[in-house]
Length: 268
Image 1 (tube, rainbow, N blue to C red):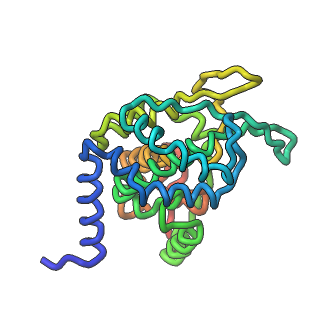
Image 2 (tube, one colour):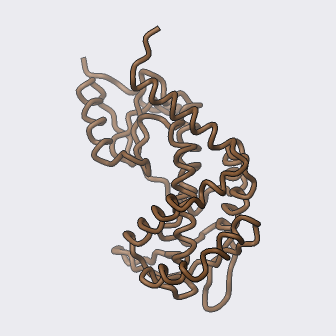
Image 3 (cartoon, rainbow, N blue to C red):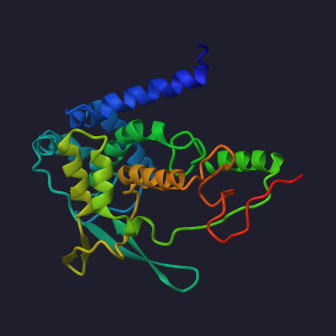
């Protein structure tokens, strides 16, 4: 039996993902120095405004040098408390207002560290034709794949966007999906804490899942399961069958027709 290098690479990634998710000390892996430094570097590169504690990206290094041992201890023993996000209104070009939720810089670093680890667990299970929020993939890759579909003779394109998708993810279903592959309950508790952090508005913290302001740079650790839900739902409907390619990010989604729609066609 001949196994191609790409197949072996995928098998290895899936095996490592399974072992990582089954580790009941996953939080210790997340908080390893190398992973945290990588997260810090990414948050610094993203820049962004301070959260409710008013600590800036430029100040976070000194803050961590003074307080990281206690912060890490609180994370490990489950006593760490996430701070609410700071609401900011951004004017839209059409005259409306977009609500932006800004977590503290510290929480952004922790979320980034969690997200980097969750990617290793979830990403190997995703569709090869899903490009949104994927490490090593970009809109350019989706465009190239779309070109291949055109050369294969596909003539129908579905362009769509999910309104307020991240704001309306069902938290209970999301946590259930995460728990199916993550054994360390401390990690699940930490993620739930971020989901329930609330928003500071005029000095008052509000808690509401619907119409929640989008958190700036904060969905790294949640996008994994969100895209997993998307991919799995499409697979269950047959849209990832071998004769029906799909891409993401509203670039060029060629898909099997929903009930009552014109069928996908190929050129002769």
